[in-house]
Every structure is written in structure tokens, then in C-alpha cells.
Image (cartoon, rainbow over the protein chains, first blue to last red):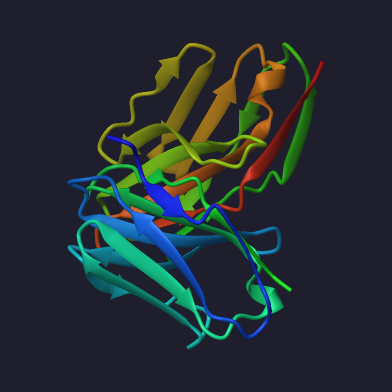
Length: 112
Length: 114
């Protein structure tokens, strides 16, 4: 298996633009997590899905953030409109219910 | 509250020294899992070890060892004879059965000086 695949690896966008981050989990994994990493806040869990259903989105910072998982092999995290304070590394991870999570390489987002 | 605390923000040691990274967790669940991850300067998150709440046996893997003590809610990580390649940020994480989400500690930045 190729592991968790995220795209793009880097994204630079202007404030106010829409940003979409993509994730392909490991085949067979039924949990998918989105994390954000910043120096100030560390690794924050934004949202996670089980069997494509959002279970807990309490970590999503505000309504500008939304996440979907239309099928078992694809998820998106969207920010609209983006702001400079959204600049961070966004990680996607997948797992089975009682195992460790495997992480993608991350997307480094810069909003200018 | 479900929480992971890594009180050591940064540690710097000279190569070949032993170093222990502390992790203290809080959970109301009786079934839970603890993990350690390594984040080298390249940025990826690398899984190192998993322990479940029913297995307090310590584990050794080469120069790495882990000490899990439920009595003190701790899951500490020791690197023996440290090497420069061990320089990274190390994260402790908790997954508890009632929610099955994974929460991370704030990480410990480990620097190994040659």
C-alpha cells in the first residue's frame, strides 16, 4: 500500500481564496483524521470520520472550515475564505478502530 | 478529561547519553491505547510504538525502550546511547475507546549534539 496520500504538498494562496486539501486513506482503514500543526498550538485534531461519517468536528476552528468524506477512499478539507492565520501544516491520517494512525506527508498551507 | 501532557518542551544532550522523554496521560476509560510518534526535521510523523491499557509490559526495541505504568498514568520513552539521527520532535498520543479519537501531547523537541 502507498500509505496515506495528501495533495497538494504545498499550497500558497491569497487571503480570501478558497483552499481545498485532499486525502486518500489507506485502503481498508475505517477511521480518517484531519489534524493541523502550528508552532503555537501543536497538533490539533480538527475532525474525524468513521466509515465516512463525521463523528466529532469540535476541533474545527470556525465555519470557514468544512470537511467531507464522500467515500472510503477520499476526503477533503476546505477553507473558505482563507485567512493568514490558517497558515499551518495540515495532516491527514487513517487507522483501524484500535490501532495507531498512519499519517500522510502533510500539506503546508501558506495564506498571504 | 482526556489529556496528554509532555512537560519537557526541549531537551538537549550530547551524543551517546541516555535520555528519557516523559508522558503523562489522563483518561476515564479503562480501555485505551498509547502511542509514541517521531517527527524528524523533514516533517513526517512516524509511528514508533503502541501500548494498550491491559498490557503494562515494558518494551525494548534496539536503543529504544518504553515504560508504561498505569499507577502513575505514565508512558515514558528512553533512548539509550543517543545518536544525532535521534534529533526530532517526539509526540505521545492517547486513543480512548469511548470516542476512538487520537489526541496528542504538545511534543518534546530532542536535540542530540555531536
